[in-house]
Image 1 (cartoon, helix red, strand yellow):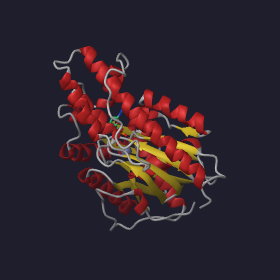
Image 2 (image 1 turned 120 degrees about the horizontal axis):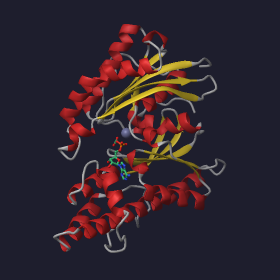
Image 3 (image 1 turned 60 degrees about the horizontal axis):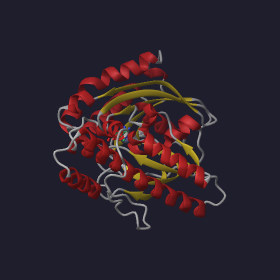
Image 4 (image 1 turned 135 degrees about the horizontal axis):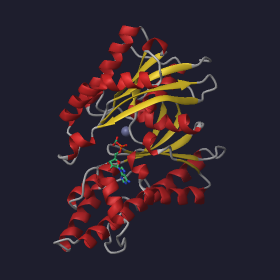
Length: 353
Ligand code: KG4
Ligand code: ZN
């Protein structure tokens, strides 16, 4: 499609209620016009994790106002929008239903086309919005719900090279924090404590690392952390700092080794493409992991792309942009499209590269 398009994006698959307006220029460049995110961290903090029923209810309460604010911020109304994109999965089904149903209602009322977006595709395509990255490239997605390495060949065209066989990396950070009595969300708390800790004090395992497959496993590490904590109980602040540093060092090693293997495979399969490695998800904010990824990128001649933190974590702009990319290829959805709790990227409809 060789005209400028404006897409409204709605995201409600986890604990962020978000809406955004994104413009796609005819040459494929993207531009965020407005981007409003309301985090539900306060609703869930007391429970040490996301409570699905509370999340769905908070989306119901706040989504309309968030969408209005996204339009107001852009000084626009729905009549100026070309398409409405909403996350249709994967995610907590109650929340996905709220956003997708709202998207359908707005599309029906305004007569605009609907684009049902896979949340993971939103993360995968963000680097094209922020950095104009060209296909093919590799993506590392490390969030509270996902840990995967994905080959991105085109819009709707993905190949999962590895994923976690148990906990997601962000989830592992959250569980480690909970175990050590730190706050929620756990990632930033563990990172802060680790800064004062001695990473060599506890020898924690690096599960699966000797195997060639590109999968991750973090639940054994969590058990090892618990046993290490019990071995020095009652734990002091120094113990907690050392446990956090040892845990962070273990997961950093795992992510670095897997990334290097994946980039080697990419180089073998695409000898003529300069490798680009895109990092997405909340864990991308971790400085130790970021530093290790920069080292791997430097050693393998890879262009590392880490979108700004606000676009690495869940937001509406990533959904609006994925919607705009699909819409540009003529990919829209009927009102019978279903919300999906599970929806692997490799099961997406294929667009054109
Ligand atoms: O992408 P995200 O905001 O939400 C989804 O899971 O969709 O990721 C949140 C996850 C949480 O598990 C959080 O603990 C983790 O990212 N996280 C971090 C850091 N900041 C957030 N993990 C490690 N280090 C951090 N600095
Ligand atoms: Zn996400």
